[in-house]
Image 1 (cartoon, rainbow, N blue to C red):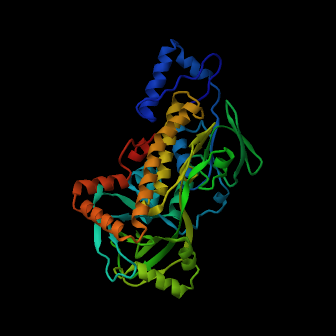
Image 2: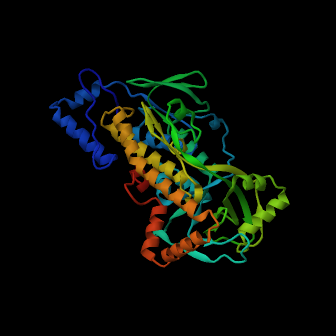
Length: 453
């Protein structure tokens, strides 16, 4: 629906109560229009200015998913542009894989991309958690997660990044999203619009600019938005391996003194490994010759799946925690790693970014359908209120887990093992943990329920 206002028609008051999602936005706006006493709503809509573009800086998971959600929700009248130099590197060769929880799988279903991804996705139907030392001969299981969040619906799937990014890009192109292999170099936020300059010299007059350009977001820096957090002095090592025996869809999380060692199942007899080490040890390990790295890997991997062999070169990346002090600025919204980065101990980083996508898409589409400029501050504040508490809560949880499990304290080890054992023996509590991990608790945006906008 066209947006903006002309003549004597002021933007309706936008006061979101209850939650910053659909119901509060719709009801409060309608009440404001009724209070105005005007009866020529149809005429006012016809007099609105033409809709402006929405520009997304960043073409990875979050940026492409948001572009597709906005395109489907707003229709072809509103141009949606994704700008990222990485879009020239298609098809993606990213060797990494990501755990997609049930709620985010529903989002991809609603966007129409899951059917293409599903043949390459590995359901996680079981998970075991151990706590031990590196030199221990056996690793006793303290906690298991088996079952489904709904009949036939696993709580997560492992998806290789290259397949998911390409599916999103192809679907976005097919639905008319403009993909431009160039960066957003600058912008000028004004009262009525934001002028976005791209690396090819073009300037787009947009209603909203979305920063989806990662943890070192230049758009966030240009907006002067500070971040707070800290470095863990840890690095995450990532590598894909093949193994002798089938994993049968079972993921493993081994808590070792240096940090968690996760074995995440992929299709076939393959798994994606993510393990945490001190920064110094991680640099040493990834630099080892192939045979020596193999020995380090076997110490942590164990014998359950037989012989194991790396399929690609291991890579490490620094681990830290930060949250942007604001998720918004004038006509700018941050999503994904541009807004927050957490420890991978709970495997929720990407899924948090997709929750940002679902929430921002919902408030923008609902506003636009009511004739409200989706880049105005009231709409963006609704998005920020919706996402900020969830982000802070997840940050506190991952910080606590990392402190509790990434150490060699006998006292803390005893406490955590008792806690894991209690959870394992209380099915209702375990079920609540599974639903939380699957992203199916709290005020859930429509896309995360599998509902189209």
